[in-house]
Amino acid sequence: MLKIKKNDKVKILKGKDRGKTGKVLRIDRNNRRVVVEGVNIVHRHTRQQSQSDPGGIIKKEGPVDLSNVLLICPSCGKPSRVGFAKAKSGQKVRVCKKCGEQM
Image (cartoon, rainbow, N blue to C red; front, side, top):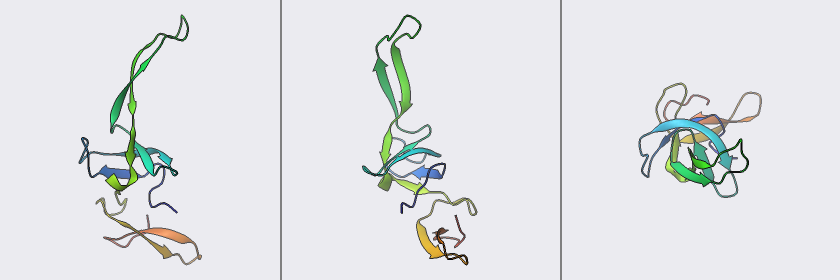
């Protein structure tokens, strides 16, 4: 089970976008990479496919390594590590290491 899920708010720890925050758009579990909204913008040069679809340069988000992001706790609002605990219903839930609240 990964500690970060889709639609989580994360902070970038390393790289050219260090300090930025954004929402997780996609997760690549095999390569342990995440795509974060507005972070690691890359330029994609595309050819013209048809008369109505012109080519050009498209800007989109590139993947970031999973170890370079830190989850922001929704209850305390601070970036923190993630732990796991058993809920009263018996399910495994994510827990903030700073405030102890369920994420």
